[in-house]
Image 1 (cartoon, rainbow, N blue to C red):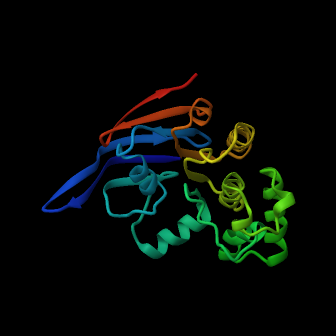
Image 2 (image 1 turned 135 degrees about the vertical axis):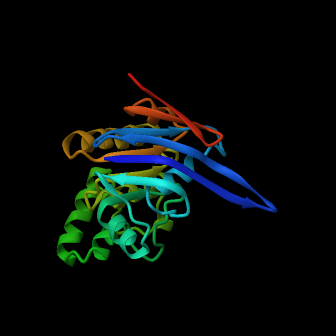
Length: 224
């Protein structure tokens, strides 16, 4: 699914720079659920943004399903919209939209007819256990409910890859288990690949593999 070669990323800091990633190479298989773990400042968010094609200012290259990823902004925007789902740590829900409308939003961008996108939004809200609040706006939802809306939104267009930043951090144990089980089902049934930055052992312990980052370098091992 994803192969990355010699990824390096630096940020300016005064008269010098800080190297966030140091020539990382690796691969993630189709249908695999991979946890990115490590202390704050280890490079997790940087790697997540690069693999999600949100950040193009890096050295190295990325291959997606055997194809080299272009850094052309227009091509990247279309590719992300069609192939990648995002779960952001701060939810990034649209305040004036209902839960249903927020979930349906990616399908609107992909020009899916209204009735079809509403039908799909209803389905995904049901999958995350939120049918009863579908008409609520984000400010009337708890943090855990907002997170589940964000997860449903990430999944609605059946992406090949889901990039998730702390997807279970705001969830109680029952909701977290439900979301992890949903990810497992999608990985097995549809071959959806998940790359998840997490500190939550409830999440990382259920992943297929953990990539540990420390000071911009990585090591990888399988989890039984």
